[in-house]
Figure 1: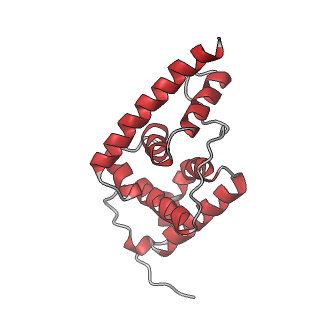
Figure 2 (figure 1 turned 90 degrees about the vertical axis):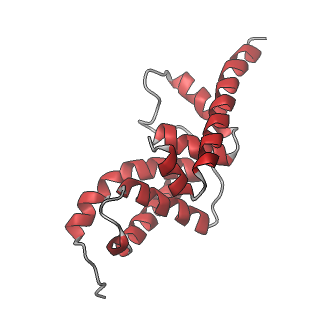
Length: 165
């Protein structure tokens, strides 16, 4: 089957495929399952390839790919967010125990705050890019980011003190 394209396969591979590891990391956090995450990324890349002729070259391809991933995730009806340790994704200078505490505290936040924190802090997107990816107003992203950080900070400072009692 021959699709009309303005881009070649090598161009797609050059621009899109380097983002596969970060897509997979985010998908693992969304799905909580390695196999489901791999399927989600595969679906995302297939949709991106099919729609690559619509991609505007001057825009952020990483944000475009994440938007496709989030849309695909929601379209498939998989809204469960399970945060588990992902190899190689631990915060810098943190011990394994600290990383687990962070992930546990993050998993107790509302799903909307988790998504914003993961996109902005873990994946490094700006608030504007996160707003585009999640299809919500930038003010909402800023609010969720602030509330999420505050809740995470509170959870990480209160819980260890409570455990010692």
